[in-house]
Image (cartoon, rainbow, N blue to C red; front, side, top):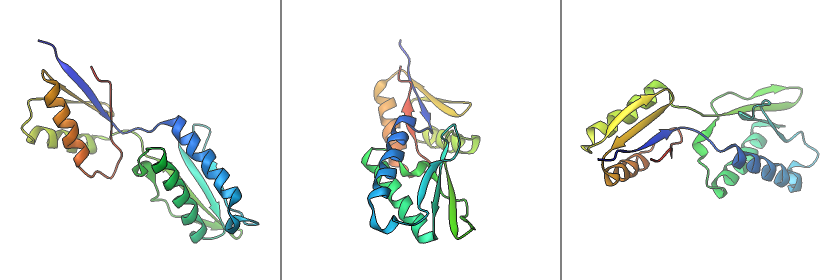
Length: 165
């Protein structure tokens, strides 16, 4: 009997984020309320693990974040990948906010997912492998119903399914 499986991961698409970054930059250049202000968006580092957003106030930072969220939504990406928990830094009449991208399932998140799957009554096996959860079953239907179950939950982090076998 064949075994089928898939992995549950918390990741983001770097190519899509490049597009979001470029589209946000372009829209900011065309907006009147950003003219002659320090409003800017940059990559947080060379690995592109987040955005560094600069503006002249918290209001302007929020406006830029709204643009980023709209661009993410139009590209089919989850807005939950944005970690906006860091406080903005004010210096030299500029406000700067670092927005990291959430990546990887820690043990607590993985245990929460496996507990939900195990109590659901589906005939599947779950296994935590580093920063992902592998779900295996002899039935593709069981795997699909587990996917629907996971999608129906509202986690504070983005969830993707990969490595279908």
